[in-house]
Image (cartoon, rainbow, N blue to C red):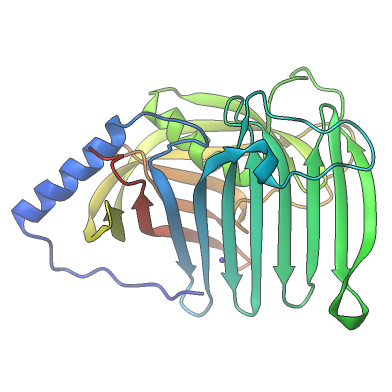
Length: 304
């Protein structure tokens, strides 16, 4: 996740400005949840810093497009999942940390909210391009690395079957899709939800568990109908723990991660607006690091 931590100012907005901001956030909370989670979100930008290392991540929720324009690939083995309807949604994520950058595209079915395909480009010390095409009972995974003449060369391609599990047939997600699921959990007033999540090479059962609320000092830019406003105030947020459990008997190959964070993962959801104000976990073995929401852009007309 490149950005430096911004210290919050002691100066608070005027009473009238706080009322306008509160009205916008309440309108956002009342908006319907649609494909890809809270459809009011067009873009979410998070920043993290421990004082000497900075990182940033951006999630952009694209409107659904017809299947023919989605760019879904055909696996060399197995039968690829297809959307139930005629459209495909996409989440475009970008990451930057020190000299490493990356992009992740996630295509999903707007009806089932299950993932159909992902493609990740990582550039830096270990550049690579990975594609996952999801099947009914597994994943076709391809990995490319830089070769001669600046061309990508295939390094591995394999069909990864899912281990036996009791939720066969349920939609499978990827970690980046859990942000919207956590917001929906809080919006619905529920305590837990269970998801199947595939993380590069292995399938997990992930429980999202809502717990007590916390006060978080936010300092973010909120863009509504093309107008940007600064939100700088304490907000009440509900902590949603992200608890992955590896399925199958194989040993874990790589720690489960969300936006490059691992360990004790949690998503903090604003109890009024449903916005994810913070994603917290361990980053680069430097301890617990909060990735705070720095900018949120809403779909025009979504907040009333």
